[in-house]
Image 1: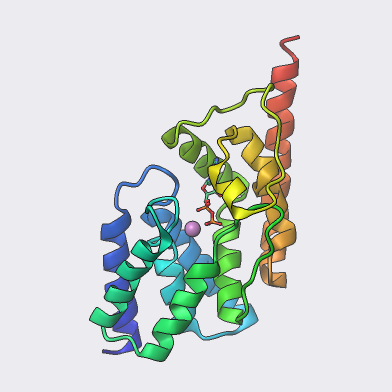
Image 2 (image 1 turned 180 degrees about the horizontal axis):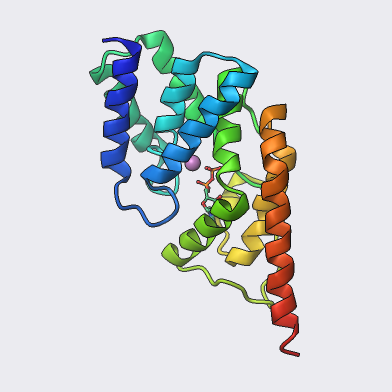
Length: 216
Ligand code: ADP
Ligand code: NI
């Protein structure tokens, strides 16, 4: 099978898998990450095929949706075997997917390849700005988190367990992750795109607190 055909088949597979998700991890999140990754690749280089495949599949194995990560990874692995992706490429794609996620403020990122760095940047850009704000509130609602509660303190998560198990508010998630992302990007191209998106989140939060404070 030609690479183009493999990518197109994978689009169909992912659409079906993530169809109707309401947590901000739906097909349109993948569509945005896929296109952002292609845009970054034009400037930063790297193997476009590996980038596209990892971007398309990156959330199929998400830890938030499976009891353990290996379950999701197996689904991806089976798919890649099924469409006859070469073993060496399967390894590259899976390695990126394993390392793509943000795992807490105090947990270091470990992306090694340019392909991985680009996919991670694209995923992070979709977590900030207006779209990022919308996704965050969608996620919070879906998983039963409070929107804002001034009595609940912001946290700095030192390890993945702490981050994974915390049940903070959606507004606190901005401080625990979203506002940190601009300094956790890998490429200059993504850093440029992030500037406006980051500013927009700061404006949003200022307005949010101003409205809240005006009640006093
Ligand atoms: P990554 O893409 O680094 O794996 P996640 O899938 O954990 O990140 O998160 C993607 C998006 O889901 C976040 O950017 C945010 O919008 C939302 N999200 C994840 N965890 C939370 C949370 N605890 N509260 C609110 N939103 C969250
Ligand atoms: Ni994602």
